[in-house]
Image 1 (cartoon, rainbow, N blue to C red):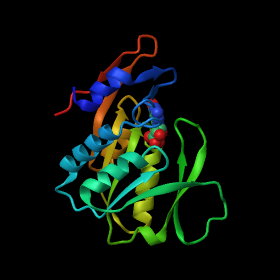
Image 2: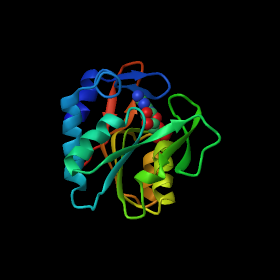
Image 3: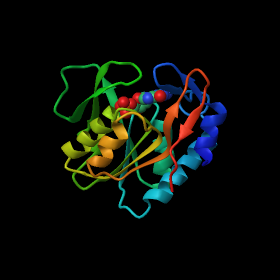
Amino acid sequence: MNFLEERIVKDGIVKEGNVLKVDSFLNHQMDVALMDQIGEEFYKRFKNKKVTKILTIEASGIAIACSVARCFGVPMVFAKKSKSVNIDGDVFVAEVESFTHKNKNNVIVSKRFLSADDHVLIVDDFLANGCALQGLISIVESAGATVAGLGIAIEKGFQIGGRVIRNLGYHLESLAIVDSMDAATGSVEFREQK
Ligand code: 5GP
């Protein structure tokens, strides 16, 4: 097991409805040293790619994205959730359905912060059905920029997102892929990775 898988086994809580709670170390209370380790691991996996910007979605992707951005020495941009229907022309917009909250949000990125010259590494804490990543990919493509790759802390491999994104031909790296989990026993099984 790698460092993140070990931490999930130690402190993650499996909830009903295919939800893995990691709020004691990843997305509510945050273990900042773990964030640094995650950033370094993504740097190792993507350092051969040209990367000019890190993109994530608020809120829980931000800490991981900051850590990755520090390793690459590039800016981090986060897509903001917007309630407004009257979105002005100065932003790129995508509609994203939330797996955890079951609602839809427009997410926006100012046109000032993404351009056709950018090579963007997209990162997030979780990958479930892939709506968040597809929204971020669509924003990068609206800007005419290039998706350099996608880095996910925890992929739930029994949901379709990972397969969809890989089938589209993107380079997706997930530090931990959960193949199955059981709310009754609290057990978590990980996919073997190289
Ligand atoms: P997707 O768009 O891939 O369906 O879901 C990804 C988003 O939903 C992530 O940004 C994450 O915030 C949230 N999410 C999905 N599954 C889980 C989960 O099992 N636990 C937690 N804590 N968040 C999740």
